[in-house]
Length: 234
Ligand SMILES: [Zn+2]
Picture 1 (tube, rainbow, N blue to C red):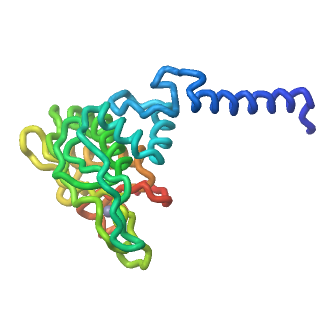
Picture 2 (picture 1 turned 90 degrees about the horizontal axis):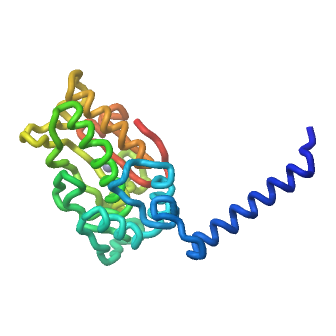
Picture 3 (picture 1 turned 45 degrees about the vertical axis):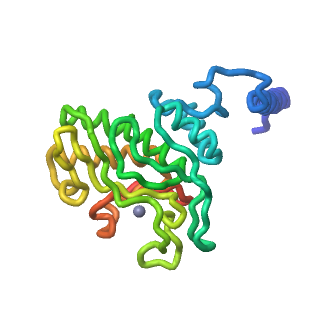
């Protein structure tokens, strides 16, 4: 069936208007409220929305906007100098992350967009789930770090850890001091197991790739997340 020429013209006109409007917003000729402007740094404290997800995609390419977003969320972070440690291992656009909205972190250098996505996950997934399952917040998220100049285990390809574009989460210390570790509690039933599976599922909403103990034995003791080109939730 042939499309009517009137509809084709109308469609092309709408596409043209959308492109012109997008440029006008980008050039600040048209001002939208920050929460509806895809080119503004996202409010990491606000509830998830379609526009915030779009802002996060733009933030992935813009480290300065990323730092601004972290500052607006009251996270002290500044961009660290880029440093190369060989062609395959380098630290670009990184910050030192030592806390998110509530939980403490052992300080770790990681890419700014990885830090911002960890903030979103902790605030909008981990803490609400901890209150639901345990009636209290998580006071510390334990981890195995971000940067590590190495290949993927069993492969010649470099790991996303070689560019600090990944993070390994190992457990959650609750406000009462009790530890819920991925290694000891993920495969168990009950509240701890359900909590860990739910926070793993939440990681998948914020990172390109999430690997948990469900994936293989190499991940028996942590959740691996990264912002590489491979996508998956296991
Ligand atoms: Zn990892």
